[in-house]
Image 1: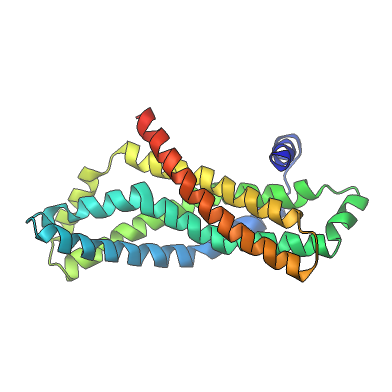
Image 2 (image 1 turned 90 degrees about the vertical axis):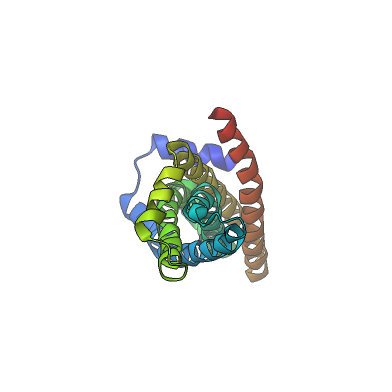
Length: 237
């Protein structure tokens, strides 16, 4: 909570360092595109195959597009993207800040009247909160394309029909409920990673422990919060 208050005050009361922000957007957003999109592509392909085998028993193959799109947009897109970013980015942030703490670089910054929260935490946390929804939008699109690929070439379902079912199945509430969760996921990843990194107490061993703790904690928090956020969005709609 203390770190949350610090980064919020530094975010709104001080002018951002655009160079550092751009660097973090590149590291957290652009460099995560490959793993999130590859995962989304094959998730959509697997969903289409599984849906075909399950629905064919009921002669309901026409609903493959519905199942793929709703599963990805509501749940799998946001959650899988958050878990991947939490593992890649969260671990990196903790290791970076933890190493700086262990080598007393944070103390040196304070000695030079530079606030580590303003310099290090704010750009990383803002990048996590903003980049995760963007990554999720792209992952949702790629996942549906993966389902379309399997439907067209493996299951001999007309592509136009598949996309028509996708568009009919999805509503504005589905899209925004899925994307809305990602802002919270991004915040949880960033605050856990920064907090663990800033609190490293020893050398290399402490950095390793903090990094592992970040990945595990972020994953658990994402999955638990997903349940409560999903329930909240359904109550609101």
